[in-house]
Length: 229
Image 1 (spheres, one colour):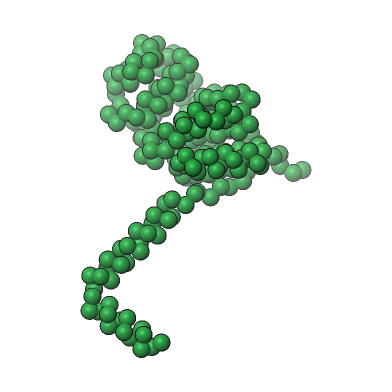
Image 2 (spheres, one colour):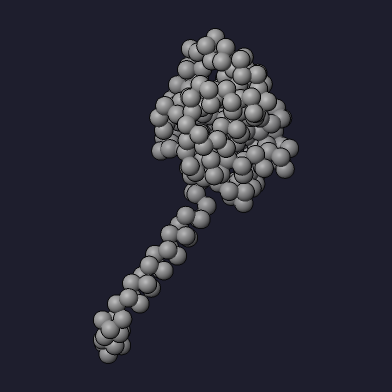
């Protein structure tokens, strides 16, 4: 065995570039596995915190009232992973008529995030939250009032009403954003995106396959159960 190790050491000394290439390849392989492994799901009971997250009437939601699985998404419009994985959630809504999504705008990446989140919540006053959400996720330009108006018009909203609602409902929108932030902190979230799928909390982005698996698992488990007495 010692002779084998000595031979390998001699080979490594004689071929340092090959050793480095092998090490890089192994590192990339490990990184790929870790990045593509489905995020762990933390089962939650129906605590007052979870009940508050699910029952918040000010949170925009899309999907049927009688959905058998509720997906709660904590998201930021300037979060790269959120932007990359958001289309998967929209495809889930399109192919699964028994899923409802609650969108928790959680602006944690600065002023641009806050501008976008406020615009999205103002768009909800027109019944156009999802259209504005989709447009904001796809837009890469710095967000100014003029850019928000352009995005709103392109998404089919009335930009004048959006501007008026941002002023008229200013405090109400800020309270809703604060509520989303408080809920995120209470759940112990470390950043965006994060999902509550049925009774399971998942932190990190989910692609189509991971979302389908999470929804199937939630259907099997049922909604969050009350805490035992």
